[in-house]
Length: 173
Image 1 (cartoon, rainbow, N blue to C red):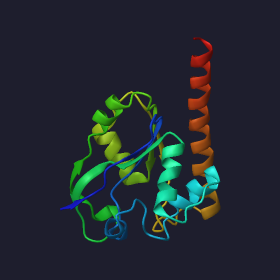
Image 2: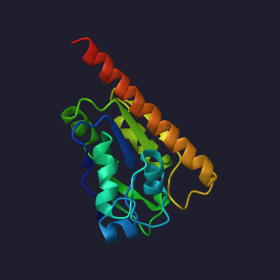
Image 3: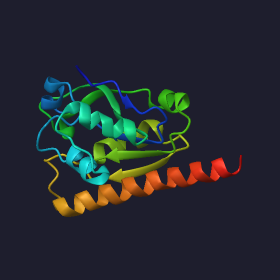
Image 4: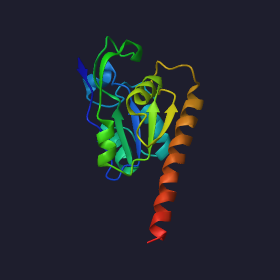
């Protein structure tokens, strides 16, 4: 069995980004999306105009933008890094996390495995769920430019909705 990471949680998170399970390289480096060819951190860097030279800088993007970064899977058996090799998975307590952080309104699933497992175990949660194509370098079904645009447009949109809701709520007080 391999075991994933604890979540990275902003102070007042509104959007949760869920992967499936860290790659072999990520587990070795003890970093989310630690494989240098994964496009996750470059996408977030482009979206938020923040540096990603260190893992601390990468985590700062999550913390500063009201995000949670986690995986659907807590532990599993897997040979290599491909999601298709995952079996005997044990999921993370995502429902408990959303109870603890009630401002979370949207879940973004990074790839099909994440989406499938989220739907199987957490479809009952009253959260908006969005599928986005995997940022993994193994995903070559979408051109890089389109992948970046899809992710950036979605992140900006859901975070702007969060800000609009917060502003409207503050005006009413």
